[in-house]
Amino acid sequence: MSFLPFTRPWIDEATIASVAEVLRSGWIASGPKVEAFEAALAHYCGERPVRSFSSGTAALEVALRVAGIGPGDEVITTPISWVATSNVILQVGAKPVFVDIDPRTRNIDLDRVEAAITPATRALMPVFLAGLPVDMDRLYDIARRHALRVIEDAAQAFGSRHRGRRIGAIGDLVAFSFQANKNVTCAEGGALVLASQAEAAFAEKWRLQGVVRSGEDGMEVDLPGGKSNLTDVAAAIGLGQLARLEAFTARRAQLARRYFERFERSLECELPPEDFENSNWHMFQVVLPPRATRAAFIAAMRAQGIGIGVHYPAIHRFELYQRLGFREGQFPQAERIGAAIATLPLFPAMQDADVDRVCEAARRVLGR
Ligand SMILES: *Cc1c(COP(=O)(O)O)cnc(C)c1O
Image (cartoon, rainbow, N blue to C red; front, side):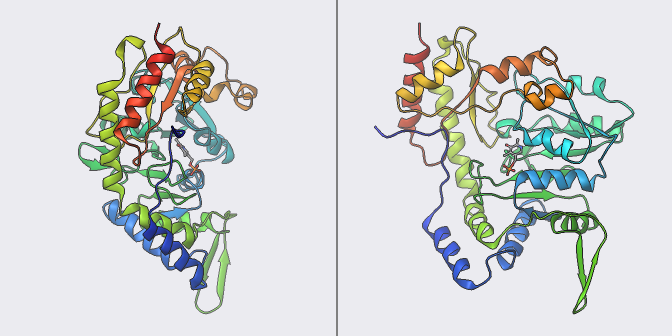
């Protein structure tokens, strides 16, 4: 039986042909495909301003720049995310302030956010882990009452919804990732939804060396921008993927439903919330029971031909963050879940029988 990875991108032949066409066209960096991809993303997001980037990380960093966040500022975020989320806060010279997670959703615990707000707080940066949004009404109510910007790390939430509306079509600054493992991929890429056309123009400067061109030969630079533009090669992949977003999301939901039907409850794993209204089912993650060790589980599942992912260890326990003064014991839910969470295989090209195979293997490995 072939090895089942925890995820795998699905690039169709038409998309591969469109990439070849870009390569033959003579225009391979940012050009007409990037323009078309941004227009398609803006359309998806209810015609809000959207700019593409070479990564989700770059989109998040530029979001912080657009919000004017820098040294002396604090940004409230979650310790359970890909480390990019808090690294970008450090990159702009600001201070990440972690708030523990809700063990049920594994997202930032909104009940604890207000206690972490200080006069230096400038923004809230929630992460929608596995594609499950936080309660957006509560999030934006807190932001409004304290006059804070919101930077949604929606890297995993392209295709997710809130009360029937698309993530990206609502909210303040919304960052997506199109990295290879995400539901829609450009191989590497990202996008930022902005609050105004003026902010979009500012984001463009941060994306490319702070340059503004005018007339035939005019050029001005007024800020130290970086280099994080998307390429037409990547945008062509993204356009091919966008056309399949709905089918991908629907298939992911079917597979998630099958996990809920087949996963043995007596194994005492904590399953994710059964949210078929809002989640895009970017991942299906279980928290292993205390009697199991994750490394042993991963090794035993691999021996059964099944790949298990780890998303994510608690960020505040990394050496860099310990040096910044964070301590073990500060965020007990994040520490417990970060040490025991395991990502089961889930991607649109999977078969129903693959889910059954994962559930069977888990029963053999974790059963008493
Ligand atoms: C993938 C991811 C990022 C970073 O996106 P890249 O495109 O890899 O730079 C940031 N935050 C979260 C939660 C992610 O999953």
